[in-house]
Figure 1 (cartoon, each protein chain N blue to C red):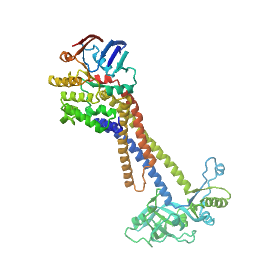
Figure 2: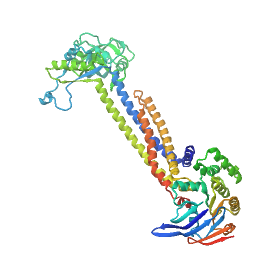
Figure 3: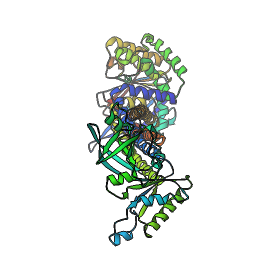
Figure 4: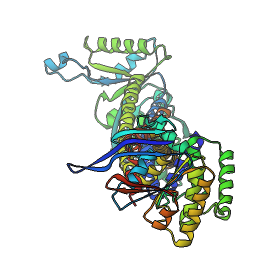
Length: 402
Length: 224
């Protein structure tokens, strides 16, 4: 028997039992489509996080108060000490390190912002002029905080695009006096729209000098210090220098944590890759369920087509030929299902990208090929038994039955 | 050409062994016209199936063209069925989703004959049996006589030296039945060995050699 004829005959068999063919291809398609859509979602989430981190600026290091260490309790825990706060002086001391290009202290709180009759609860960020460089902020109007002494609590603020719109409407915001908490500030700049970054909407914040924020929230500590290293190669030096300086300033105790953006990014990358694999695997299970369905339907097909199989034997078909015919049917079904599923899955991820443009939801190539391969493989494996049964069918019995 | 010696066929029905054939000794020469008659359950279809290699004997030897075929592998038996034996059934056994022409081409398809050659041979046969305008029709669109003619075309398309017919007219009206018998006898006249299993005495009497089976044995072997 020639391959082309075998394929043609199997195709005819599939066309002869349309609902069965339809059912099986759909089950295959759902499996393949699920793998493609779910892995593209996982990959999209990963891509999104990576994008967000690059938006944070490169060569970034972040200093947290307190020491987080796995594998043992720090000295602070033993003597019941709370970690020392980070202070503005700590941040200023870091600027002297050779590997460090820029330092931006950061303190954050929420306060009621009022202008005219309107007021709004906003996130208030206390920092210095350097924050604009580190976060790559563009201005829509006016200027950012000046490079003057960071210890000075100048009563000025820079507002996000949404804050400007909601509080000032069509009015000019620059130069207006606003009330933040119990203090008065003058608007000196409006930031361009930046959208959301790591769940933090940059358009809904206001930025004031760090000293002003500390006075506003009645604190002398910082939430964290952002550091930009001079270059990518300087990141490890900058980290070591920052740790050394802060250790010296904190009476020899290493009570701060310095993380590099790379480390954070890598962790997220690992977690999300594992997540993608996991959802891909779960979707893969639906593929093997489709395989079991194929086996059942093929077994039914074998008993439905006893006469045909018996006849083929009488006409000179060998067992091997009958097995091959059934396997080809399964392969055609699997390819039909896989192609439909692939189209649906790719369409689905395109739809996700359309609805959430920030999410680069592209199914990874390994997931696509794995899904298609699994579809083919399950179809063949689960058809082996029915095909064997068909091949061993007793031709006389098959033909004598009406 | 066909030589059976001590052929036994025992079916297991429950735990009771049933002898369908008991020690059949039979020789059929090339080009003979043989009818196999007998009451239901006498074993005539079983004998036909064994001659056609659709069934295996439980005992005895079967030589076809001097070659011992009972011990052949599945693949070799399939080849013998394909090249040496043509089957015609009472219920036609055409594949419903295939056209008349495709049904005729089926044995050639299994034999791996190229499409052009298949089309040539099947077109010839369609013309010979007056089915040219029915080539693209499916079995359900054909009359019983037409269906059986398609089945005969399918059985003879590989030019087998032996043609086995199991109640070939059993499902046909008189006129179609006669047509079918004429075709079969025409093939026999051209040199094919024809063995017909039938209940119909009128058909059975036409054969030059008439076998009568009772209880798995050949009771009578008449030559006209």
